Length: 113
Image 1 (cartoon, rainbow, N blue to C red):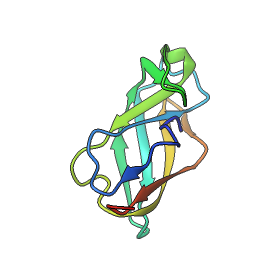
Image 2 (cartoon, rainbow, N blue to C red):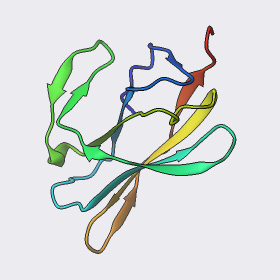
Image 3 (cartoon, rainbow, N blue to C red):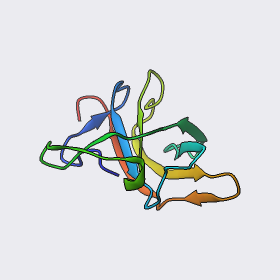
């Protein structure tokens, strides 16, 4: 995950860009999702896009192509409605195959934490 780990993310935040590396060439892919398990154990899917720009931990931006294998999602109202650890996993499909990325953890803090 390339969300800036030094930046705290708070419950209820909107507009947080979440970028996951898939380790796959996405040029011919047909489906891109981020599978999510919220702190209460409930699961959902966020429809993701192929990233064109990623950011490193120092805030520098880099252009990427589908061959680089990054997907992204920008949070909306209600996506980060709980504090705690969110488990995130990239999911990509091609015509006859599927790929699950490595699970990562995104900590969402309570307000005023």
